[in-house]
Length: 188
Image 1 (cartoon, rainbow, N blue to C red):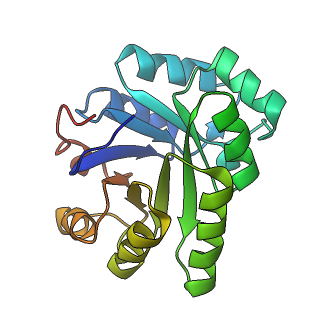
Image 2: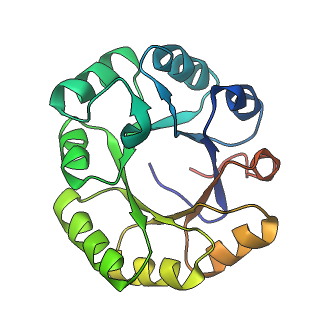
């Protein structure tokens, strides 16, 4: 998966948002909540609509982010990739052929150093930096992590999106469905 600039990702915190994501031009969807019972059907709906699906393992109810849990996810849900704050989970996912996104909370310089250590350990395909409205944190991550950066968290307006891109983000994840409608139709 490659991401070009001005790429908007639908971040779904509730199953009720799936219909909006299905009918939007976004190509990538982050499932940020849910449970293992509903996940196979949700993933199938999104994949049938041509969407790439990433599951946030840390926020999923009923499944552990270990090798068996990841095998279960692949067999019954078939996501394109996973999101986690845990380097070991991402290492396992990468070994199983999934795309990986490391989520880093840019709270302070120590959190950014820990993020760098996790990047070196997990070798993720992308790093999602939160909050996505912290331009300085995005710029630091872009320079220091050497992987494509996704800005996420608190992205509520087109101005927030533009500022994240100006700071060096390759993509923006947002739960604001209005911004999903502004996603380019072909960005991967």
